[in-house]
Structure formats: structure tokens, C-alpha cells
Length: 197
Image (cartoon, rainbow, N blue to C red):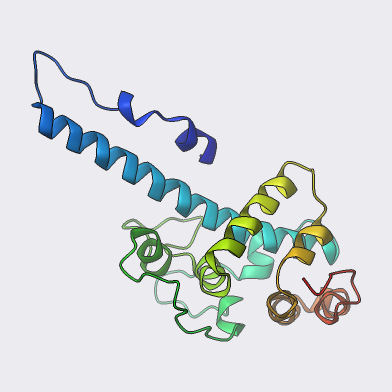
């Protein structure tokens, strides 16, 4: 999906015929398309960052596993489900977060439609959005994409994140997945080859 959005040319989304729409309206449509594509890419990158760090934690603690094992199940209507993010400390609102930014609102409040396979909002991505200043966020995105391409190992990816963030996430994962508790505690303590990053 990220590749699809990245390959779209906003100048080719809308077309004109016989001078319609008028110049001003057509230019506004192009600007809106560019802005919406930027938002979509940023949103997908935030989701990939959350997926990447969770996948690296899973890989480093015993191998691939269903995401629901670490995150908790997608709650049904009215269901109470313990989730990974409910075990994380509230980071508060850092100064770099613009609460009117559409990407931030989408991560916090969610999509308009529910999904049977995903949460409406993105609590782990939002947590990372709060935890990482924009320059660090960009570096971690680049590293995560390298990890997904097989050019960076799971422990190397984790080593680039702040050690306190990795410790917080692995401690919460240990509560969610007790069968991997020992391996996750090693990651949390830094004995699992995760640097102090």
C-alpha cells in the first residue's frame, strides 16, 4: 500500500475536459490530492513503524508469532480485552505533536469504518509518535524499512530505538506473552544484545 501511494502522481488523479473544471478549481483539486497522499504515506509509515518494532521484538524473543499474541485481540463490540498499549505508561503530549494534524487525529481517533482484522485507531503507532521526536522518527522509519527489506536484523533495529522505549515495550510484551517472559526480560535488561541506543 505504501508503494502504491508513493507511486501515485497527484497530477494524474484528476482530469479536465473542455476547460472544466476551471483553472482555480483544478489547481485546488491537485493541491488536495498531494496533501492527502502525503497524509496517507505518513499514516502508513507510522503503522509500519509500530509493526516493525513489534515484529523485531517477536523475532528476538522466539520467532514469528501472530500479532494478536503481543498486541491482544481486536475487541468485539462491548468486549473488554487487555491490550499491550494498556500496559504502557501515558507519555503525555510532547511539544512536537500537532493535535490538529490529520495523521495524528487518524492514529488517535481512528478510521471512520471498523475492520474485522484491525483496530480502528492505532494505539501503538500513536505511542511511538509521542515517544520519538521527528528526526528520530524519520531515522527509525528508514531503519524499519531496511528491516522489512532484510537489510537489517531484528536486534539491530531494536538497538536503534531508545533503550527506555525498548525496555518499556518488552516489559509489556512479557506480561502479554508469559511463555516468552525470560527472552523478553533479557531484551528488556539489554542482555539480549539491544544497545543503549
